[in-house]
Amino acid sequence: MDSETVNIALLGLGTVGGGTLQILQRHADAIERRTGRRVKVRRALVRDPSKPRPPEAADIAVTTDINEILDDPSISIVAELVGGCDPTRDWIMRAITSGKHVITANKALIAQHGNELFAAADKHGVIVAFEAAVGGGIPIIKTIREALAGNDIQSVAGIVNGTTNYILTQMRDCGLDFSEALAQAQELGYAEADPTFDIGGIDAAHKLTILAAIAFGTPLNFANVAIEGIDTISAEDIDYAETLGYSIKHLAIARRDAEAVELRVHPTLIPQRHLLARVDGVMNAVLIEGDAVGETLFYGAGAGALPTASAVVADLVDILRLLSAEPDHRVPYLGVRPGAIADLPLRPLASIHSAYYLRLAVEDHPGVVADITRILADHAISIEAMLQRPDPAHLDTMPIILLTHRVWEHAMDQALEAISRLSSVRGAITRIRVQTDAA
Ligand code: NAP
Ligand code: HSE
Image (cartoon, rainbow, N blue to C red; front, side, top):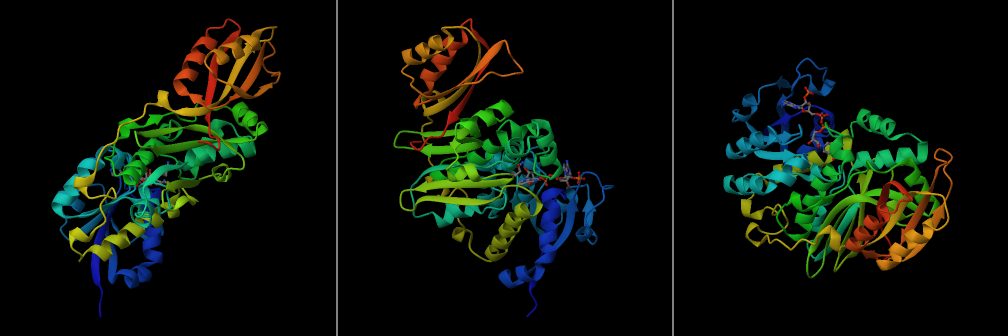
């Protein structure tokens, strides 16, 4: 029996669009065996038609006019692989209202506009699939939404940005400076069009917004995430952390207890024995704690053409399988049925309990360390380890590195404010949260 042909369009033929095309051609027969449908890429949208395209694009009508896709009734699925919210939000809304299913790898769009897009999709009976938006090739959305549905999830924590993990790894292992490592990540197709989204933690925050909503059945709320990037991390912090038995990783953390939820993205010192400390390069890993399953860890390439396209094509296969199913049989976007989505109170960053790494430059004279430790003691902050090592590049000051025990963040804020007022302390104090076994 001949399989039905389903026409799709790719919006974007860059890193992810090119990878998607490659997989669709390589696995055309396998996709047909899995779904009973043959996929034809009817059109692809690009910005610059003069750019060379991969050989797989030779038979595809390439256009710069989105209307040629959105107004084509023969196209039933569009994969948005462009990025950003403008004009993609409007394109996707138009696709939905004209009855087309949508696949997107765009975490910024889902984190910021997912609530309205999902509502519109429900109204028009179409699917918005977004597995590629988080974790690159790791099927983390399907896992939380479906495979862990027997759990009350307490926390989701992990490395969810490939670019920053690649940069930190290259700085540590190859001695590259920050900008060299970033240039490599861009060359490899890992970074966002605007790499400050990666470096500044915004991309990781978009992904955490999505993970937390699915894990906890809450609405998507990007504004709730406290965000710090890796731009304040220096090669010396990486070295000092290693000396103290830690790696610095950029972590995204969503945690819930009976009272509140905390959502934060920031560099973190992790003990070298911890599983997440061994996740290097472009790899991502997400650690989930459920009441029934305990801890589970999901690991894989977090960015790049084929790993991301693997998730895009998995979404396509899901949609093809669901084409003839009743909308009611679909898995809800955020894991719970729309009417059951419920917000939780947000715990502010000042109220978290964490250990800290501190690096200060001080004038090297008697009593300086005593002044600092006295202020810490006044705020009930106890020191776990201290390093004092002359820096040949700055002989007028002495770097002091402190590891503290766990303390409320507001106490640390107040202590640092007082320490920074000491006349012997020079420049800004570096403060990085430390993941201990207790948290
Ligand atoms: P990319 O390589 O820069 O490709 C973007 C594509 O979109 C290009 O083909 C570009 O056309 C096209 N495009 C951009 N603006 C357009 C416009 N105004 N009109 C028409 N076409 C336009 O980006 P990417 O890395 O593939 O990322 C695409 C999406 O996937 C983003 O949302 C990103 O966050 C997400 N994502 C990326 C990765 C990754 O590893 N790269 C992983 C997961 C998710 P031209 O080719 O003519 O310039
Ligand atoms: N820029 C993103 C990253 C792409 O580096 O993780 C994958 O979402």
